[in-house]
Length: 121
Length: 433
Image (cartoon, rainbow over all chains, first blue to last red; front, top):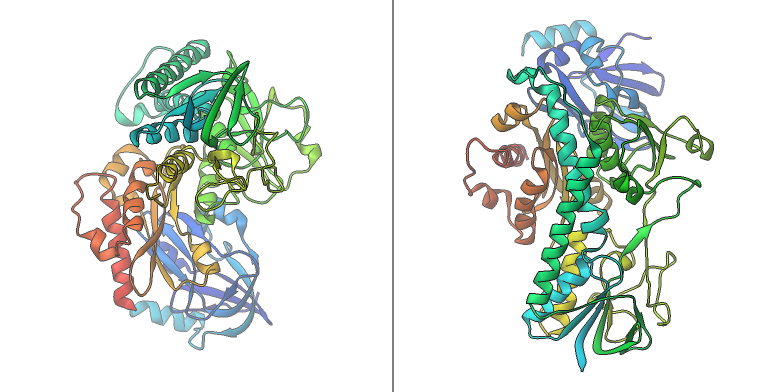
């Protein structure tokens, strides 16, 4: 696992060449509270930077998942859809989708930068 | 005499057509060889809703403690009594239907009708003549994939409940039976060939229902093969792999059929033979829903009477708890059609009535046109979704915008006030755009 990158929309991105794995940050799961439901795209769907690709529902609210990359979905964590509360327990293991990316958000942050960023919120 | 309309089949399409036709002064004869009310009243919607009600009453015992109700005695089910009461309810509704038809002047003939020619029908030795014929012969269960399995009719006829049931199929019938039998205390396994139940439904609803069923202890086996369906680990195997058209008594007519032997009709439900109409489950691409069959039947009557036919979007419902309903456009359909839409969703964790009633996740999702804000569709999974959905039916039929629908004040506290909450979410999204 390379060092994770983070988006302003609170997703973590694990880059492995052209392939990325995307999940939800600990900060976000904490803010959301008990997660009830995940709405994820299907394999082969196309994602675009800055565009909604699903949503996450907690007892408090429904939040859109905003894509940090453009590309094609190659894998979806279907098991997580049955037990979305695993995100609350282990946010950095509970990945959402794997994407063959063509482009990424130019404002992705390092761990240190993300920590600074969430202090400003 | 020559009737204005002869109807073959006394199910929802047939009896609705009859009752509408007599309103316009048409003379009507309706033939039913089995039971008036058709599959819906006798073997489908009504008895299963009865059982669902019993299942929910029984399941409530699991929540007594939460609400401070204590129970020191035994609670159990005497299914023979349940079935007796279910049959009584069905009989009562069937008798009321017959009385209604007769009181309105419809001639009800109990017997097997055979359409001999474009205008002539035989029932036993009796011959009838009509200017128009409506074929409303309904549907039957598709042939099971494996021999020796039970149909939903067989399950409804059982005097004693089985301990374990394998349900083959992942459509609405399979899901409703899984839900009911599970709550009645049976161990349920659903087996499907594909990856997801309810594959014709909105994905979010399908995944939500799958999650709900699994939470209640139902196993869902995906990617199954024929061998998986044949396993003998269950008391009963229920085959719920869909329904097919039945054309009893109309085989002699040179009717245009599709590849599944369902009758092809045009936009006024006329077959390839003039003055012979078809409606309900028997027609090509039928969604096999009673309320759609009813509206088709009424439209046939209106057309024959020279009146304007009407068209409405309809809610498709799944009667589990929380209830499920889908009206009009889904996100997937909107995407596929290239429509520029906005969707808004709320979960109902902060809706007072919902929180009082259930711990289950409930939500409403609405699809609207991004530019006009006209409501195009809604998917609901919440208490009384089948009732609340009608508000969206009215909204969509009348091309109402989010802003227009929001003008109507909803009672507080109520389940339906969640509609205003989801419309507020959409308004927020319009502001962002």
